[in-house]
Amino acid sequence: MALCLVATLSAAALDRLYINDFTISPGETKTVEIMLDNDSSYTNLQADIYLPQGLTIEQTDGDYLFLLTSRKGSDHAVASTTLSSGAVRLLITSPGLHIFSGNSGALVTFNITASDTFTGSATIEMRNILTTDQERVLHHFPNAACTVTKYEPPVVTSLATSSCDIPQGMKVKFNVTVAPIDAENKTLAWTSSDETIATVAADGTIETLAMGTVTITAATTDGTNIAINYIINVTEGQLPQPQGNPLDVNGDGDVTAADITLIYNHLLGN
Image (cartoon, rainbow, N blue to C red):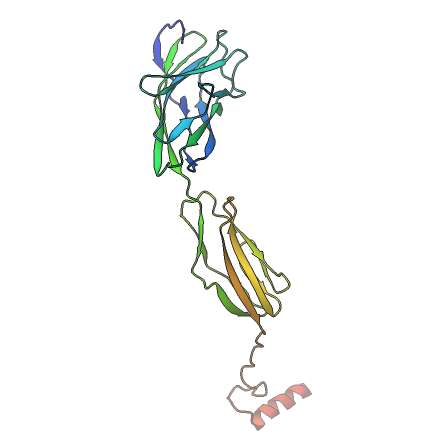
């Protein structure tokens, strides 16, 4: 990085270069962003990226594929090399000392691929982060690290029976949970195989409409399409049973002349 350096200073307190934590599946290639938050203006940048075992940066013809975003200036160029330590050194230079635009957001994107045996979680580190400003002063950024976790697809489980009888005209809601607790997308899509027999709302509330058999399905929406099915037999609705005798108007438990007298007087308006 051929720069004329005047002094070495620390970057502004709020300025930082970092990668957000992310998840990745074994064998997956994911686009990762290097973020720059800056109160001050910078023209050039260097960072050494240390990847854990099981993660690699995409290359073409031996060159790492780092792409600058719209925050670059008119003559910014990106280059990279592998250090003896195994780290990948990222260099962004501007011969005309043009500054990076904006004060936050992605500055560089690149693709990371996880090996088929990638497990657990790992850490990507960025060290030796240096920038220069338009006065050619060198600024030192703090090291940064992000956590990369193996993606665990959600699994639908339930405490409710998978087959049951429900009377016509009822509303019920099954107890469905999604594991693991920290799954990125825990939203479920609910469907009914026959909405003339039973419908199901977005929150999983089922309403039985007519006698028959229907399948209610709860499925994940993250692309894994893992589902659990409930087979519901809608039975004949039960009419509510009358409570007590309507002629027992005085509520003593028996229909007597006293009740008839009260009814008679009421009809006469007395």
